[in-house]
Length: 60
Picture 1 (spheres, one colour):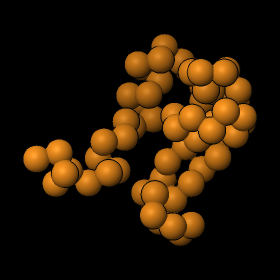
Picture 2 (cartoon, helix red, strand yellow):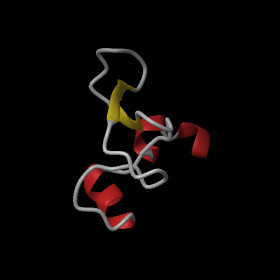
Picture 3 (cartoon, helix red, strand yellow):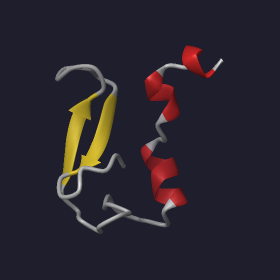
Picture 4 (cartoon, helix red, strand yellow):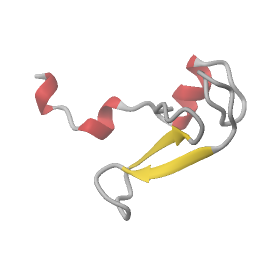
């Protein structure tokens, strides 16, 4: 069943990310950096986005 779930549905929303990491602003939970990379899920212009830490490259 998990193979049928689209990849973007597995990512948390911004609000869920803030709540799960007890944050009020975007910052990396691993290294604390506030610099982020906004990346399209499948290509540059994809409206489904993932956010990565610019310093340690972890997916936020």
